Length: 238
Image (cartoon, rainbow, N blue to C red; front, side):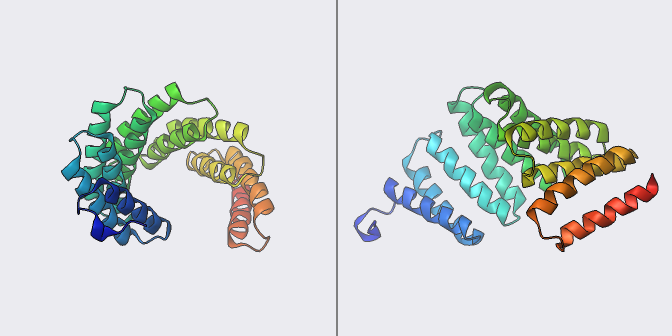
């Protein structure tokens, strides 16, 4: 391993070392420890690299994610925005890494309930993904889903449905019929149709959700039971 005593305190290889330790703590769910190592890595890079070095963007991004995981959304936002500024200066306009940044910023705005800003950033990410990814890429499905969720949060159900259905279309092509992510997608769409009073369509999506869960969960699992109860309640409304 690296002997910290033999290296100067701002040696670039220490930044790599600190960054890797931070990532291990993230996997262990120890986000405040992760943050402290990410900050050490960032500090070394700030002292040793040019202000718009791509490696700085990575460190700001990691630090931002650690803040986000700790619920410190404004600090997360500020780190994510600096990462984005660096990327915008150093990457071509439709680089996928820009979309990652737009998504991160969108997620923070969603977490603090600023849905109009969240929508702007999620849509920016989606535009890039549509240009650079294959049409059945899971990131594209996730991106349609993100935009749909914001429309659902602001009560624009018909727009939400259209984005959720695009997301579902990709998932259905990319995964086997009983894939758990499909259940989440069917369930979201069922809730939307329920909210718009289209109970018959909601029922059919709910039944699709149930069919998948029955394959992947035991029959007495609370999620399966809740779903069965919801299906019964919905049938009474028809």
